[in-house]
Amino acid sequence: MSDEVFPESTAELDLPEIPSGWKYCSLEELLESNALSYGIVQPGSEDPSGVPILRVKNIREGRVLADDLLRVDPVVESKYQRTRLKGGEVLLSLVGSIGETAIAHSSLSGFNVARAIAVIRPSANISSLWLRYCLSADPAQRYMHLWKTTTVQETLNLRDVRRLPIVVPPKYEREAITSILGALDDKIEVNDRTSATSFKLAEAKYSELVEQSNELISLGDLISLEYGKSLPVATRAEGMIPVYGSGGIVGTHNRVLVFGPGIIVGRKGTVGTVYWCEEDFFPIDTTFYVKPKSSLATLEFMYFSLRGLGLDGMNSDSAVPGLNRGNAHALQIRVPDQADIHRFRHEVRPVFRLRHTLEKESASLALLRDTLLPKLMSGEIRVREAEKIVEEVT
Image (cartoon, rainbow, N blue to C red):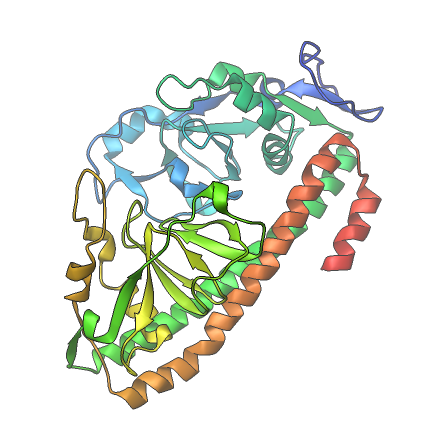
């Protein structure tokens, strides 16, 4: 590797063969001094004006979701300056859903993290993006799950994070690989931003519409929240029909319960969540699905109405969270006249179709990225071959 010198310290591990000129290093050897720490252990009571911290729930599919943030007292946060973010750090989940990774964007500068997240600062001769991709792939993922402890919940200790194996090809190959994978991630991010922006515009149209209306109608006079059906994993057949639980899509099946488009509402578990499905789907028994009862209840209008009702705060049983159907049906919503509702549907229908198209494209790109990632990291596929594959689909 010419001008680069990396120590060899992973000989005792069972690691895949890699091309000549590549090598394995432990993660610790590729970091700045004392550049691996976990975050705030006891954040205390939430401080609405305090310092925002990231939790495991904020790291998903390689990105940071900077919503539903916990804020802590600045005095508490000041004791954890080692994990205060500047931007560019690699984040790794250590508890619960271990092995989730992301890079902290510069917009997160000044944020901190919870105990369940490790903050990793690479040395100058290795990029954050390379480390994130390596930590997301085998063999690092395999050893994370091999070394985890499960006394209370799955936990990864920092001493084991330090010795995770990281493959190190020559610099020019690392840069080429991250360029290929990064291009796919960038396209997915653009799709997400486009979808989010279009939906904000649709939400603004909805808000303007209902602000002009004074008529209140009970939810139960507009729609019926119908119970989903039991569908255990063992009974699901291979197919392309999305299966919805209260947390979103939980698998696929070969049979349709509801013809799309449609709306799904979390009933048990993640209570009150509201999902839109543009295609046919199967909602399971932890959900409701929406059945219109009135010509005023266009699905597009009801989707935004349901999202604004605060259903997630209507748990009927503190021990087993659940949404009571009768209580939900009794809620009052503001409803404009039929002409305005149907005009709104006509205006926002393209937004729902666009989001569906972008989600499908992003899913295909993510599948390609996740297929190429381990093959590129092991040298099974070389850069030029991967470039041809990506060119054919982008």
